[in-house]
Amino acid sequence: MTKTPCSSFSRRAVVQALMATLATPLAAGAPLVSERPPRGRGPVRPPGPEALVKKARLSGDVAFAVADAKTGEILEARAPELGIAPASVTKAITALYALDTLGAAHRFKTRVIATGGVTDGVVRGDLVLAGGCDPTTDTRAFAALAAQLKEAGIREVKGDFRVYEGPVATVRSIDPEQPDHVGYSPAVAGIALNFNRVHFEWKRAGGKYTVTMDARAGRYRPEVAVARMKVVQRRAPIYTYEEANGRDNWTVASGALGSGGSRWLPVRRPGLYAGEVFATLARSHGIVLPAAKLQKAAPQGAVLAEIESAPLSDVLRAMLKYSNNLTAEMIGMAATQARTGQVRSLAASAREMNAWAKDVLKMQSPAFVDHSGLGGDSRVSAQDMVRGLGAIGHAALLRPLLKSVKLLDSQGRLVNEHPVQADAKTGTLNFVSGLGGYVTTPEGRELVFAIFAADEATRAGITRAQRERPPGGRSYATRARRLQRQLIMRWGAVYDPAA
Image (cartoon, rainbow, N blue to C red; front, side, top):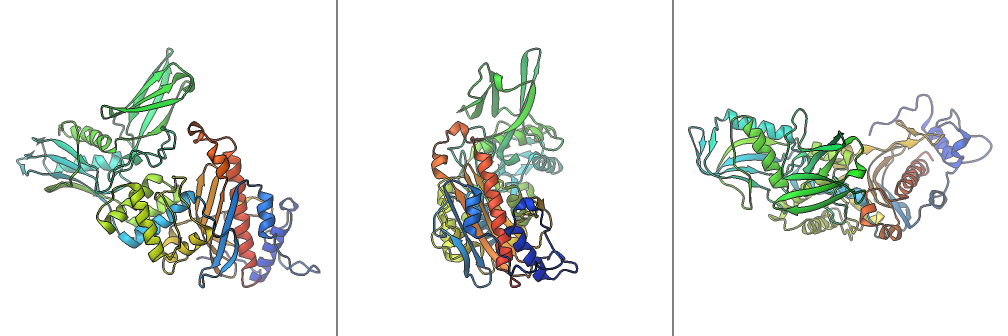
């Protein structure tokens, strides 16, 4: 890790100043770094962990553990063995699972295959759009695939146009308990387009609404029919959804629309969505394809066009930065498929990751139900997460992919540079907040930590319709994040060799 320069100040002075900052009320305006240690008062100790937890006023459970990264020794803990929902901190374990199984240089491929040969630009059999578990493909990528078909001289297809959704199970929603309309819980398969979301836009003119459903990306905006929207005269519910005749059929309440706007909605039929958009793009090159049909078996034949993802390490860095659920699920299932040769369900893939985590990371009782953390039934203890994140050789793979955690100055403001450096993965569900990762103290000691807070009683009282923005949820998350930062700053001061 690159250390923050301390100019002419000694590292011991920096640590003493950190302790003073935590021990002093934030409104007092104490400097972040002082030129000399406080005199006449003896060593300054920051608030104890229980005092910080009490001040956070978080209902439910708060659990954490911090360990020396080299020895694994637990330095400080609270309810370290309590199983608690990890939320998106799960993605850190998923990233390690994929790196260990597939390798950092792995690239996912999406291909177009002719099953019956090609003669004079005519595909004699079927043309198959074949998914390869790439979560990053968007309409621009599909446009490149269609352009490759044109360059290959393809003019006509005699057989069917089919879509192979890939070698893993197709799941209609990552977490079926989420509201139907939230874009963070789309369908999962071995093929993806625009993170399996469709763009819904509305405008009001002359008292009437016009709506569009399209697969926009960059300069491309192909409209789609596999997802349809109807404006209905009502105030609630805002959205309704049903699947019929192979389509996603939506209605939206006119009373919630205003004069205009847009949002991304989840796609439940990823193969047909991808097929429709690809056919539209192929048509722009004069290649007319019939309506897409799904195909279960992996296609065999000549590869006519192919695109590939960035290296897995880059895909994971983006996944961890933006906490994209679809990416986590597709990559996790791809890793399971590579390990076992089959993925019958998302839950089965998560169980395989649990077994791997026990065997390789030496976690004792991980109980993940998916790869993204969206499912609220996942459980892991803070101590077990520390074991997983601190596994020998794996921390060096994961830490460079994580986001830096902004810490607080003496006024309680977030700062980009701080003597304590932390890189971690956040996790947020309704009334659940987690953070797990790595800390470097001012003197260079490496720590690994996990912090979880969850109010399961309050979560249980939230209706399905409230789960996108439940009352009190934002305040809970804000207080939890502040506690996380204060604990990291405490550990950086107390467990630094200069302390």
